[in-house]
Each structure stands twice: as structure tokens, then as C-alpha cells.
Image (cartoon, rainbow, N blue to C red; front, side):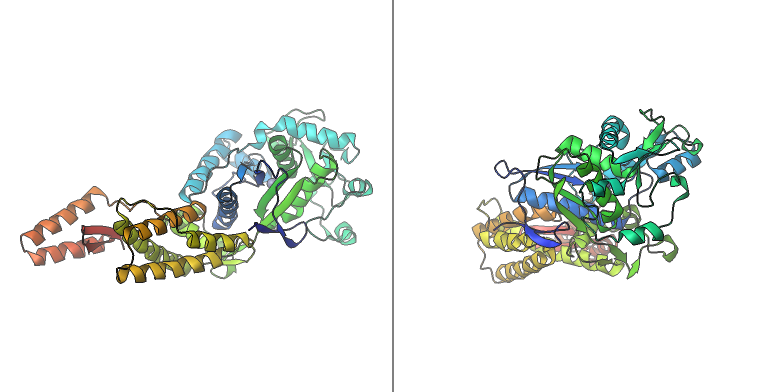
Length: 471
Ligand SMILES: [Zn+2]
């Protein structure tokens, strides 16, 4: 069965078909982090969603080229650089490194390319020049270059492909930002911002004088530079739909580099917002969490990833501490079942159980219905537990079940494929307990068991000897 995804362009669920059907290559661009702070859990919902899309396409046999930009020059960054008095790259480098560490904690596959805006000033200038040549961009009195929505529309192009816009309202309703007073119309946006004293040392030369690129143009220039003028998938949070993504379309299609009849992006995917404890995340409400804040509360990247992957990407998701606790319990149930399957399997190898895999892909093909997929996975866990309990599962059936799990976990990436290894001091306690039992000192053995429990480990006595698991 084919994969169906909601396309924001058509506002409908559509069969996904890449530009290059035969080679099964897919070009995928995800708007990446602005590296002025640690990414928060709302940002991470979007990045984990992007990882799910990529992994599922790879599961389906597509060769994905995954590009994610690093915004390392932007208003907020310049403000912080000015305050910290550090050179731009020292300041952004720290948060960029943290971003990649966090990506790893959440078990996201690394994008194939992570271009930095500051290293693509050349292609950005070229694209702006093309828009000037076409008469869609203009130079304002302050030396900045703006994109003219009016000229773009009168060239027969549509501004408002992802969202419905009311142009009359835009003209009178929107407040003019003081640093953009020079533009001709309120809806116009900056492609190149002329250097001002507050920019400090953050500027580049250009044919129009010193300055820096606007944020929107960076994504158009870098995505087309790497993936070509027309590519398959663009992923981002719904908060970026307007104006960022709409402006990306306007700049990229305004430059008219696409072959006739092709759009800049065929398929736009937007992930919905994340609420925390039922409210919009805000520092003042005490419900603002970076990934690091949650790791410091002793939750693992795996538990956080699992929780983020329990809800459908187009649903607003309420992220809670209780949710994280139940994520921990659900994963423990899964781990328990997998560990027992591994015991029964031993060294036996077998082909994957087709029914688990096909149930899974049937759900994911349906616009990435992860909650449905989890439903069938936990049904499978119950079935496995039942068969393990009445010993009706032989080693080859267990091996086949495990192989199926490994296959679907290439997408979910939450399964601990190997058992969690206890640190040496915990292992030593386990051995001491064994020695006590051997010496028939059951009181001491029980004391050690209790001590392990306090340290967060549970002993399970299995036919193959005692085993430790976190709990
Ligand atoms: Zn972007």
C-alpha cells in the first residue's frame, strides 16, 4: 500500500509520490534550529516528527536526502552576541553543539546535510539578485532589499498558498516594525538587511552594501542549492507556516528556477503545537522545558521520544509529567516482553513475523497514524506475554517476533535492542547476593535485594539465573 500524507498545499491527505519515482530518491528539507539558546520541548516535537518522516520513508525503501539548516545569524542571535560580547561563531557554536547532542539523546538520525546560513551568503546573494532582476525585489532608502508582494502577485503568482490571506487586512492591520520603516508595503519582507550600528561585527559585503540576510531567504537559498529548485518534502512546525514558509515559496517560485509545471516543494508537512500541562509553554508559567531540563528530572531521551511519538503529528499534544511517567511504564512493559522473547529465542534466527510489520505499516501509511500503530504494538505485547506464560512460543516463533520488532523499531527507535547493562557496583551487589544465597544467608540476600531496589534496580530470577533491570 502507498503512503498517504496530509499536504498543507492542498489541505488534504494525498498519496505521496516523489518527483523521481524510479530511483525512489526523496529530497527532504526541515527548518532547523536558530542557535541562540537550547531547543525546548516544543521544538523537539517538530524535530522528532521530522525524524519519524525520514525513518518511515527509509523503511518504505526510499533513499532520503535529509537537509536541515542551522540559522546562525538572525535578530535574536545578534542581540545576544552584542550582550555577551563573544564573536558570532563562538556564541552560536555552543548552542549548535548542544543541539546535535540533544538530537542524539532523542535518537534522531543525523540529517545528511546541516548547512549554516553564514556559510551560504554567496548563494543567498545570488538568489536576491535574481529577484531584483525580475523586478520582484526592490532596494529601499536605507539600503535594505525587500520582497514586493504586490509585484509578485501582479506577475501572476499566488501569495498565500499555505494559508488564506486577506490582503486588505494586511495593509491596514499589521503594525510596521520600526526597523523596517523603509519598505513600501507592510506585507513586504526583508531579503537583505542593511548594516546598522547595533549589528556590531555581524555583516557581510554585498552588491548593495554591507548587511546580512533575512531569515526566510536563507531557507530558500540553501534548500534549492542542495536539493534543487524543486524537491519533494518540506517539514516544519505549524508556527512556521506563515510567514516563514509562505515567504520561502514566494522567494523560490518568484525566482522561477523550477522546470515548467513544477512547484518549489511538492509536499508540505506541518507538525502541530505542543502544550505543556494543558497550557501554552511560557517561562512565566513554569511549564517551559528544554530537553536538558527534562533529562535533569531523570527522564531519559528514550522516554521523551516515546511520549512525543504517541500522538498524531497534526494533533495539538498536551505534554505532561504524568505522561512521562506512563511513558516509562509503557516502555518497561515493552522491555519486559522483549527481554523474555530474547531468552526464549537464544541463538535461533528466523524471518520476521509479517503480521506485526504489516499492521504497523498499514497504520503509518495512513498519514503516519502512530497512535494506531502503538495500539497494535501493545496488543502484540499482550499476545506475546500470553504465549510466553503458557509456554506455547517456541524459539523460532520468538525469533520471528523479535525480528519483526527490530524492523518496526527502525522507525520508532525507542526499543532498547540490547539489555540495559548495570554499572559495575550494581553488578557487584548482585554477585554478593548470589554468594549470600549460596551460603543460605537469606536475610543478607534480602537486604541486598532491598538495597538494589533503593538504587533503582530490580532482580528477576530467571531459569538462566538472576537478571537486573531498572525499576
Ligand atoms: Zn526555514
